[in-house]
Length: 380
Image (cartoon, rainbow, N blue to C red):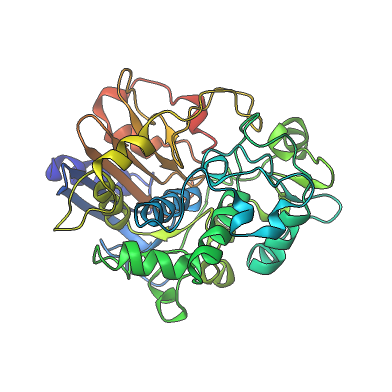
């Protein structure tokens, strides 16, 4: 399998389909693939390596969910605890019944950040206190638990502030101390990247220009509509190669996204399911709970079905009918997915920003080469 994957990604780089790419596979707690090809930074002539961190946009939500589950395992919080028990100010405007479970399943009713005419900027996203204050002041778009809709940015701030209030530590520190450190990948798995490590991060590129979304399309999608002055998709802070190359974005805690190597995030997901070199992040019973279907309704932001477990999407960017697969994809085309039945994790990190269509991951799955990507994964 190592040779098959290596040959595939070498070909993707040689043909220009990818710039630099990492693929990691774990099966039943053991690494079976750690493949890398191409360049991490073409201008600097820096090759991609297995330990090169890559900004993975929403793949970071898998890191956030994992931190929450590890803290639940340690008894620091419970899924049905009201958020106001940790963060009293969150309860303003009728949000006092919202629980940690609602946050994990994108059903708090607070998917938006300040929109037109304010327009949240990348600089705003880097300001933790400002974003949390905006969430406190938000009017819920629906009652907690009534509906679910992709919380593109607020997922990270809501759960991240719960973590900070519950532990007294920023979520980046909890990730390092409770997850990445024990697994031996503290220098490959980040929210805010330390300044000393910024030079190691892969540089994203987007030669296709596919990340430009026409204004008319923005206006027609629920994701980008403005409700009570808030929008779930702030136009000035959309994920892109430029966004993911900004030093301030990489260095800030914005835990709806994250920076990671494929092997580090695969190792993390594997340690949720199995023991990995003596480390298991949660008990088998908790993994069973967190990987089960928690919601299976229409997503209010995208208008299509979007089954969710506790903190993860359910489904795969390859045909997986009849199998439970949980994970997260990122809008640049990166992803980490765990097949629960076979206890197999597949992770891809790459620096060609390709609009989240998972073309590379499809090519890595031989059975899916002639199959379309499920629509629900194009936006993940």
